[in-house]
Length: 508
Image (cartoon, rainbow, N blue to C red; front, side, top):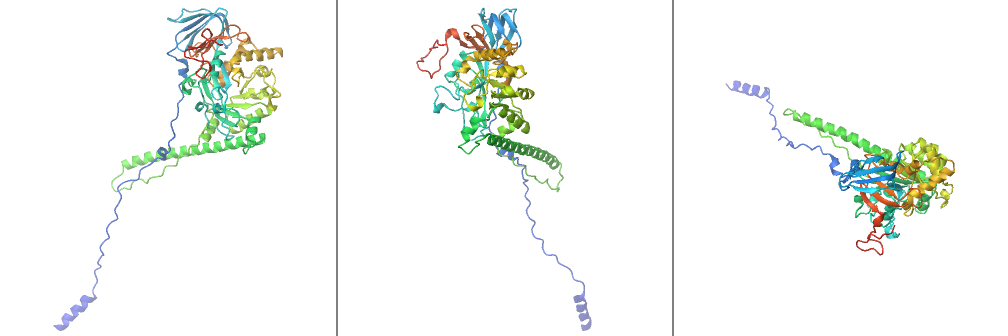
């Protein structure tokens, strides 16, 4: 009995063993909140982007009562002159131009134009009124931000003073519109501002509705003189090197923006697809992994402007005198792929007029200014006439608070010089130098610059032939409203000596 029990014990001890699993550790908690698809764009405020007034706003003015000017010599600047003609203005636009006077609209102001001449309002494509106002003082000098050769981010609208006492004087000279530009200290001086030539309390009140943006550039003597002692450039070589570097940097900035836009568009498509897959996800299926959004490019106002130039979104206006500089600037524009709208001053444009005509570049010049600095010594009074003879678009500008008061006479002088040289410039063509052509330079020729039905009611009524030194503007209408009436005298601003409440000052 004892042996059997021992055997049992031995067998039991030597048999197969049962493995015992250790207790499982507790499961790690799973986060049931998914990461968000966060778009960093919302963390980069872009500021309030101002939207220009719609271009059609230039043709509508509910405050403008009907005006009929009849029995006048109507010079349209569109190829036709009407003797004993009639112009009808209504609601801010021109509703009739021709010989057969229609019945005047109800309540119209009817003006007997016998002996008078009617033209489009004069447009000055180069002015510094409001940024170099009167009286001339350092406190008033806001035309040049001469702290860096490239200040593309500067905007004239931020400095324009619409109560400049020079404005009523320009208006009395028949001017209805002007492009106000920064000065020429900088290679790229900033954004211009197209204004209606009238006084107001704020700059926005006189903005020309829908006018496109312009940028002021310069070359030659002025920038190298200003920056020779400020770290350069001090030579023309340096000027073009700085300009190329600026546009190369802008091209790189533009490439970064385009790359970011492509990356963000792809990210948005991925996010949308992820949302679709997550919505159809079965229980237990892993959620779509989050992909980080691309970081937006930091905003740079200077490079933003230069990039817009490269995209052709800004009209390029260039201060330039010498033919050699003009040609180099055209080459620079071709190199970086942007267009030049107009060369301003351009006293040697006659030497390279074929180049400019081929590129459809206008010139803004004077009738007979020359010799006031080295780069102006080869200016000739036939410049505008020669340029026009070659098929170019010439304009006569002022660049002067005095010259803007008699641009009609300046156009007359330029025409006379051309005719003396055997260049046949018609009255209509000469009138276009101060109306239709500068309207094109400003990018508003579809709404103003000529007397045609459907265009804006910007009109000047003259006492006689507008090219005569004896002629004065009798009536100036802006957007269908009388802005100046010589019979009532020129309105004074609040900043003129001898002014008093209600005093119109009868001075011309």
